Image 1 (tube, rainbow, N blue to C red):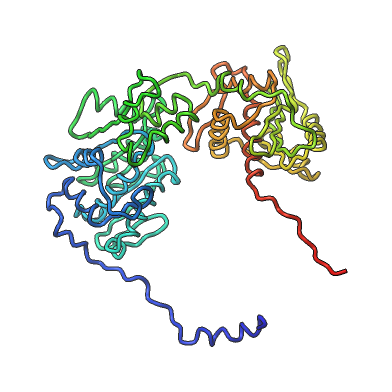
Image 2 (image 1 turned 180 degrees about the vertical axis):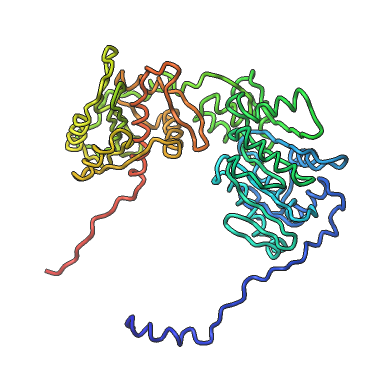
Length: 503
């Protein structure tokens, strides 16, 4: 059949076919007559067990059930006697199901708390993080026929017409929270600032019975709203602030089994000791204590790597000429180092400092010649099979545009948190696992050892320490080069097209 013949038959194909009705929705409230009448934790538990399924992970699509520590938190924020606290916080290690518990609470407040026009907001560092809890609520509703028929599910909000209810994700921005009231669920409070917490608290007090509930791991610094809230709860307990913490002891060794159990109340169900051991091997000790052992520690030592981490990776075997590599530039113009780092495209990549422009201590006002850098790039592209030349456009926008016009495989790679966060964590994990090699070079090695590390919402970033004169450019370029090399290594090899013919 030709295309024209098919088009001519389309009206006949669809003759008599009409659009079906949209999914029917009801304006009636849920039948909650068999739930406990008191609006306390017993009612929350009964509602969840009757209407909700676990959305994902262990026990997925099975009726919701609660562990003792989860019921303890519900008893704290929905007490059987007395008024509900305005503030609540749950702190424990990562991976214990905090987001699941937050989602159950939101579903209950939306459907079964018998509040007129329940307004519920999920707040996190950014909208993507807020969507973690929001989408869990979304999935819980989608798998419950009784809830789904009373709900309008949208990508950015959940609406229940029968009681004029709303659930929405919001970014951690004081201005974005202005004007909103109701209950706020704050995910990962350790990366949220004081102004946002205050805005949420002011919004909750606009409507009677509303709360601000935080779910988080401990912060990296004592200069954090969560740190101060934890101190407040421990030193000056208040009935208006329920605080529940599951944490290890900072004085115990990192392998302490008691601390593993204390900080991870879901150990044995959602988590295993093998999972903890795996993350311990690939994490900095301070990060592991905070994220897995839920330890409040304010260590100022943020050195990224030690010589013990780097020494096993060093090799005297340089990258072979003609090898398939990615090339990364971390460039400066005045009074700083400029480097070109190569990384082989293979399962265990090899990093090598291929060129460097280093100002001497006495060279005040030193300037790197961009033309010399461009010529070095041209030469390296002839010596190696460079599949990608990646560079931060800062200071080198014009030279990079010239190289692009000349046909070199130039890719702009701004060194911001969103681009560097994940690759920085990947580099650290590979260094700890020994799945990367570094060609021995004193300057190159020192750049890794000079790095300090700061966690970011997107992973982490390396930066210069208090002594700003110590250089880290080789390490930064290595992160860029390796992440692109790993990408190219993951791509399937395209087989050459086969040409068939007859003699």
